[in-house]
Image (tube, rainbow over all chains, first blue to last red):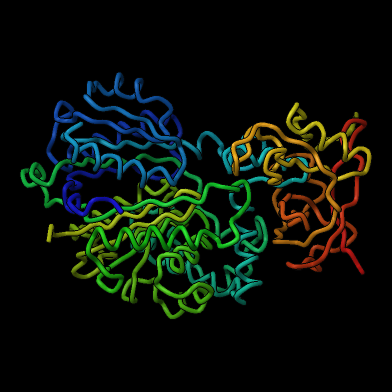
Length: 381
Length: 137
């Protein structure tokens, strides 16, 4: 477990997002710069106040810093995979705690929609490149790998596609309340069932969007955070775990064991129980990932997720409102970054029609071969 | 080889034995010469003992369907005419997993745990694919 002394050591003071959707003429550098300008405005800092930079999905950290006019002490680029958003935020906390940097900008830019990203076919590198060997059999895309994991869950536990529909239906309800969301038209379970398959058993509504956009977060030490323009949002706890051995193929336990380990660590570091959480931000590249995460992080027993998600449990007003922005399925596919920003905005009370009442603690979690979780708090208690 | 539109494997020194075997109707799998651990073709190092020597063994060619999916979208042009097509993850009796297709069966009849056996399907002069069909006892 990460040292409990790091609990509340760093805080998010600024967040920024671009418009989401189809933004032709913007490359990832522009989108990242746009988001970073918003984040600087949000906390009242100037570029010169930034002494650490982590860029993600933007192709080159050097070029980004050069074009934005930054000379940070600390600079890093992380691979353009969704699981790396959590890793990047956690590394920023460690860099701040160690004194490597005081104030770090995390910057993400994604022009996937305009660039025609498909996440399958010749450019598919899911599974660390091992997937390529299966192209002759037509196997490609992270969506198909998740379809296989869900088919396994269906067979083993009796979970149904109708039960899974609770995820996209709930997130779309949230997106309808979010003016920034790309997809805002409500959907029903019946529409989910009638929608076309991409890789069956997954329907198109089980897939995340592909769109353009940028996100930035600014983190600093909790001491410095008190001088920021808005109330800081504290990082109470964070953890990682992996299941990388044999990860060319879906894991036998659907990452359950590794998630259990990450859950134990994050709750212990944060000094928080599941029941204390006011909302969840669950990495939703595909709707089964949400089901697996809820089981892996212990909100219900393994195999019971299909049932557990029914009755509006994940919806605003429910027991654990999740992905209140609409998430990747309906707001914008910002690979975890948007979900972390939503956690901050909820804890600040900035979410308007989709605001969770008195939100004080929110957990981000990402199920993948590399698992991360972060617990954000409104107070540094 | 003209007319074959689907992706072909990139054959290299690490997987050549597998593809040579397939052409001769044998399913060849890689094993560590030091500790015997089987591994997915293409790696230099044994993840179990870190040995760098490996050898090839003929698998019995039987296994079970670990899971399945059915593609309704063609990410590769060569698969367009076959939509919807299945991809399965097979757990070989030796314990190793491989992606493949189940043939001689409708997609609707696929089920997890189904016993299957390898069948060899010529793609081009150089390449034969290892597919599977239901192993009716």
